[in-house]
Image 1 (cartoon, rainbow, N blue to C red):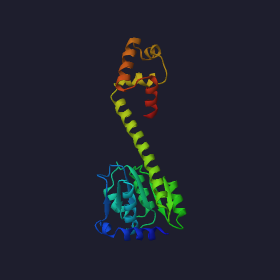
Image 2: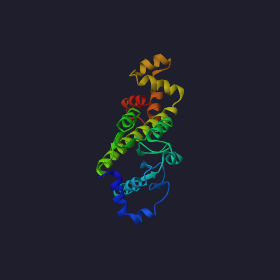
Image 3: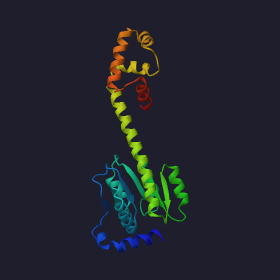
Length: 230
């Protein structure tokens, strides 16, 4: 059964539900910053079928009928994943992917492709897409890929938060404390650092203690990890 046929069956079963949900964008998440599945497809039947599917598993989602409509509400803080039709009138899927890349988006993209679209799908993957799925596809197959994409995005978002926190703590160090930090993470002893900075060993110990406190580090290993992250 083709995706369009399946969508039509869904619509038949949900005609009263669907009739109340017209518009350029359906949103069932409080804001674009909330983790959600963003769907962009010009086919109304597919959009409504996708909405039913995502509702059935309680996945927050926002659905758009074009790349332009999505970009009009796009927020750089968008988290989750983007399910994107590769062929659409106006701005196509590849063009939207390129525009998002230029805006620095790291939102994982799953492309929906049809017969004969494999070369385009390969190009999308080469440009950083997370995955692609070929029509017709099983609902569970799509949900599995969405789940993996959202896991990847959550992990990436967590890494970004950790990195931001590390950079903010580094910015709180005084110039001298930063010098001590840079030398400590190379494994140099306090005595060696004191000689290199022409200060007393006690002074180095004081600065080192302040560095540990400001960086919220419990050990030298923590400091080294933070230095690598930053």
